[in-house]
Length: 416
Image (cartoon, rainbow, N blue to C red; front, top):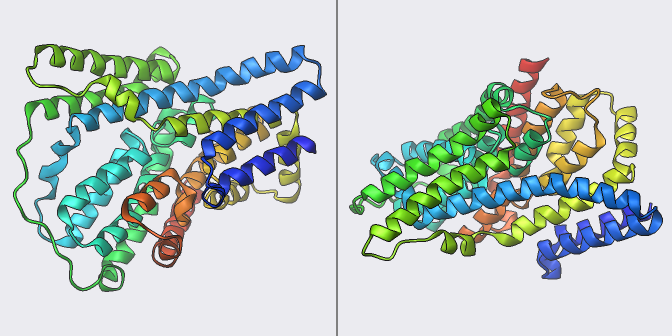
């Protein structure tokens, strides 16, 4: 009970970081230390130490994967590689551009990750739509698109990556099973906005038609090289059975070597990997490490298994349990929720690609879109376009809930 209280206490501190004006990474790391300190004090020292090393190994796999992925995205961004996407936006019709941007965000989130996809599409939208109220609406739709796009790819969302690395899901099955539900989760909100365009985006929408800077060969090269690196990760795991973080190390190293050659033979100062490493969101990586170790302490103590039994006793539908986790991810960060689910439900009844894991993947991904604080993509959009909690709740949350319901309905029909 004491360990559960400690976890809840630190989790509340993380959830209300803005009120406490304290970075959530600091609270997660302190929580990891405190929870494991209690485990060591209350149990024999040798058993917790071995368990901690085992959980640290599992946590490190996720942390190193994220470190490589974030560095690769920063490297592509440093070379302005995403300028390659500019020719897609030649249309002068705002609704056509809306659909293109959201579909692009959906696809990019599956390849690079949902947070980076939102930042890239927001950057592009600023050069197309000068009106702030239009960009705010677009930012809300990008949150929905990126979270939907992240669930059907093993590298598209942190939680999907965690389940993939934990062998709860496999890349071919998650792509085949969740792609259509993820599309439904995006298409329904987009269709509603298209039908009621004036209500959501206003009657006057201005488009910037000024000529854009020509795209260089370097930008093309880094873009396609980085894209190849991300796409290579699931293939390396599938064919060679190597851990995803090693595959990500390979992809990053290939781009790193190419940029070193470019820097050596160029007269101009080039963006370096050292600069990319300085720019990555290190606090987020430390947050993931801390929160995963906090959940690992609960798992080691058997608390998660106890709550899993209680859930199954009172809620007899695995699909309903997954849906509850999904809606909860709008309030509670989906990373600890999924980490808790991994510890709560064993591999014996819930085998790899069990409908429960597939539903949980979809629900916790798209469920975070219903509130702007429910996902990293939402928090990024909040900062970039100064979106308030109330504005998002009034304009976007109902659209996200429609997408959430549509995605789960399509998946239910597919699986059951």
